[in-house]
Length: 313
Image 1 (cartoon, rainbow, N blue to C red):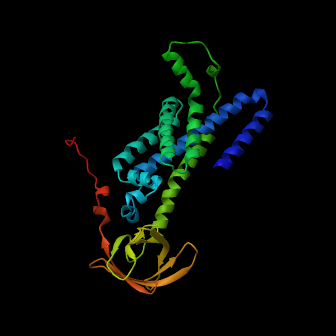
Image 2 (cartoon, rainbow, N blue to C red):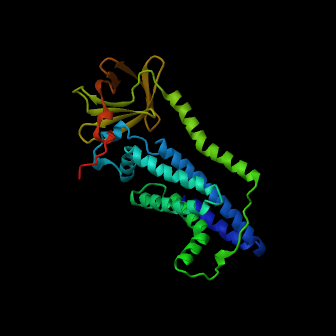
């Protein structure tokens, strides 16, 4: 992202030198229009992602069984947000509304005010919790301020009863044609709908016949592991007894009901795996040892309970 910012800076300087003065107004208008549509796409996409809990999903079992102090701040924040459906729905609805308001000229200023508020909040969260999209959120905030500057300045002048004409009062041309409408609506559909379609295909392809997803407490005494976690994205994660350290492998279930695991060095091995559907226990051969484990109901943990206290103060 930093490299892109540097490229953008140099590109802006070059364009500033090359563009003729009589083209500046039109170029600025087109830039504003592109920025508005881009922000609308981003807000609508992230709003829908929050409402359907694809941005902040429920924490996986390996996160739920990790000690609070062992979690990085970004994972801790992400997991906490995933426990509240109400928060995701409210924030997602605000972002979705902001994006929709940006699509129409009459409601665009209101949408921009909401957009600035949204991206101020997002930027503060990303910086405070060390989430790795800081530059991206700051760019979106900068775009929002750039777009709201003219009418926002007018609003400030009106509020303080100062009506002198300023540079920002000049009318601008917006290329609002049918071609751009169709192009932008198509882009919005592709940006928002395709990931959901791909996720459905991927989830269908990743389903295994054993239904392993979840947490398993190791019952064998002759092993150094305390828990096994089968992640929904096909990761097998071991938690050590002594240090709670996590060791992860990517896994697939073979046709003969064996498990094929791959470590981060791309070493692949095949192991016996059997699951008793009646008592939800598994037998797993790993490192020349037989590991026995029993499923744990992670959904019953306090963090995933949808509770709301009214009378408790």
